[in-house]
Image (cartoon, rainbow, N blue to C red; front, top):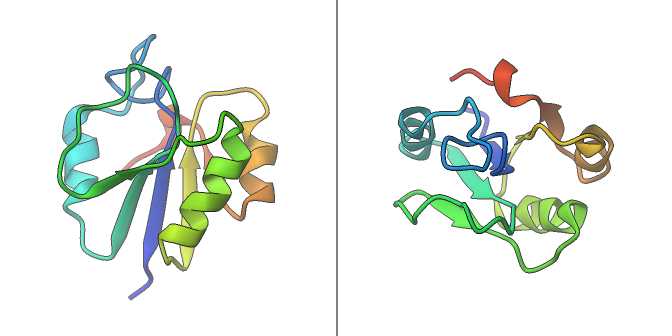
Length: 108
């Protein structure tokens, strides 16, 4: 089975962001419980979700691309997705080896 890494921006992407995004807490938690899936939040936003079992946080660097690269090194995966609503993140994701997905198009 292929291993999946899903990295998330917060603001405009996750339910807890400012503004709130379309990815709900239920989806997020379900994804965290999915076998062979690594979930990573790569935003330094103060609105990030409270820690729940099954996800990691990488926000040591203000540069989103470097955080994505770090996520790619930490979570061993065959497929890497980056869910974000930010302009220009498609290029950052591609440079870090991730497939960019807009939050309104992300489905479990």
